[in-house]
Length: 204
Image (tube, rainbow, N blue to C red):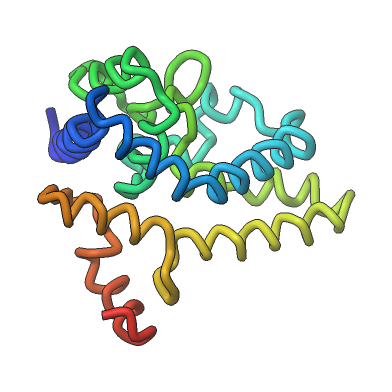
């Protein structure tokens, strides 16, 4: 495995250990904590299906046009992996673990892209909130109200992961840190830039 795969695999191992079947209470607590985020993701998903379902097709991936699907181009926050694990079965996570450790040639695609698209139940937030210029132009020029709604979603997104205030992504990292786990994907606690934002906001 390359370095990207190794850090993905290690983070998944940590999360699966913390959320093992014997720790149902911990899982239920995290599900409750993330309930607002799940609601947000459902709203965004419905919006994308309605406005972009006819625009964003597999052709982008098949023709290698999609900037968001390039090899190792997907930034996964530790909280992204936690959220996905919370709604995934053990078989789902086994599949992801297998894909991560597979050394097959992925010259032009994200390791999480399968034949039917992303193999995550709830894909990383950066993937969910990515729309290419061509797609946005086609949809938003026809319906300015859709653009306004999308801008609202972009603002809401920051309330979950941008640490200029207490945010879910930081809280999830802290729970695992307090339990003795550490991951290179815990950007809100190890990225100098994000730590400066937290410091300026008086959160450190």
